[in-house]
Length: 110
Image (tube, rainbow, N blue to C red; front, side, top):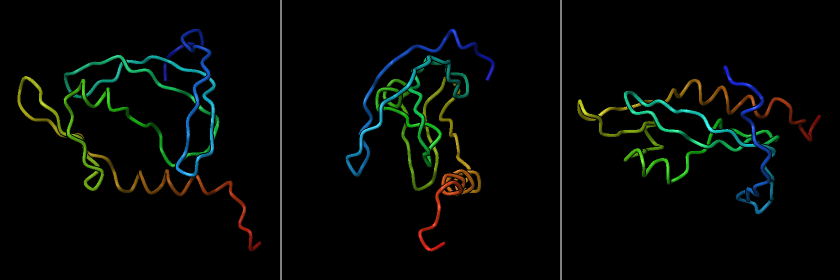
């Protein structure tokens, strides 16, 4: 991604899953996220655990960007100087990433 390991910060942050299991972060990094002509510095927490998600956006980022997210349409809408912009996700890429998380899980039937 073009950054050095010196930018990584040791950070122990608990993340609690839907089934109440706790995972702790390993490190964090602050990167510039560009959405059309808006650039914001965003803190990412790094974990060592398979997940069907690449990133989880906090409400504070959505609020600061004045974003209207829709998971059904896999898109984000937000205002820019030129008007309303839309960032669309890819259903095919999402499905590929999601299925890749199950690749390392052994089937109990085998």
